[in-house]
Length: 483
Image (tube, rainbow, N blue to C red; front, side, top):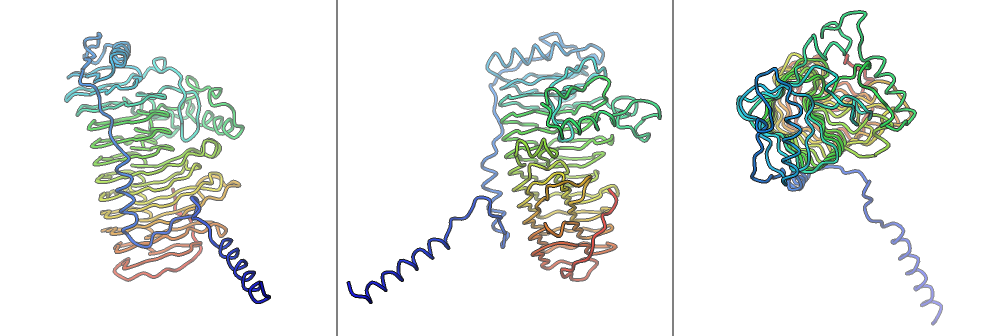
């Protein structure tokens, strides 16, 4: 080999090594940046195929056959338990609640059981705390032993709540709600409330005490949720009307394959969120009606240590065809979002209320951390709101050492008749700006200030009219509006 051939081979080898070092496959954690609406729309259809409602054996177990009486006064806890156990043991089917008013303690759903609430049937839950056993729950994003949710399941598969009847949480200003500690909900100064227990639970979480050793219940005043399946698969909640929950209505925790459809939720008590999936994967919320005392839909993944520990994000959620009549936030991510969230889609929803604070709300903090990414809203029609159409803050509640990441948000065809304080509000860290927020073909009328944005990167406003004027990206120090 002559010298020229040797040099050529050496140069070729160096070039090959350089190309090899420069190339790398796309890291699974590398952020997505949508550049066309076809990308999220394609992703929606991929996710839709993953979500399948469970089916059940064609066999009915009427609760009245197990001793239940729909007279509104007989306690039917044992009858429900026996019916559910018989249905489960028989390979599954429907536990049918016929016409009547059925008073009961908490109902535990077992695998392959569909609790079917017939037309003109009402399940009414007890107000007596002695009827509520302590079970493992997630309460405001923190795990503990507390009162059983009114409908509960743990590690179960194929469960449902269906029918056109009503489930009544039986809370009011004399029962459950006063525990919030606010006079507007019936609390009287000098009477107990949840504050000390809530603070104690925060401490136990920070100390990473085993959740099963965080014992609450009587004497602690932490209200139960209405429906909370925990670590379950294949869930369906369809058709029922839910009213007057002690606290959050529907909050599956670390569940997979969840369908909530044609459900009507009504309550104006404290923290009566409508549907709050927590660290769940593959969720469809469709054609539901929300008239709530807090957020209509709030997507979560655990608070601080209890979210970062499991590390399970909220993932692959489709929200479509829903009406938000009243509530603080329409589509909300957080604030208990330490596990992160990705692939959250909302389509063809309507909302309007003088009490509606925010349409799309992302609320997190540096005590949470986590990555919130790939959020897509399209065809959202709004009558009025108070605070902001699109709102993102990284300063919700206390700060910490875990900077959150918020990126790749696309809002298209948002139409607001009567806006509030802001059009778009962003309050982020300089070290962690909100990245790739895009508004397309959207109109927001009658706002006080079109944009209030501090730290962002890659903001795109394409054919956006606010107060009748085209809007261009600007940055200015942000001051958080009131909660």
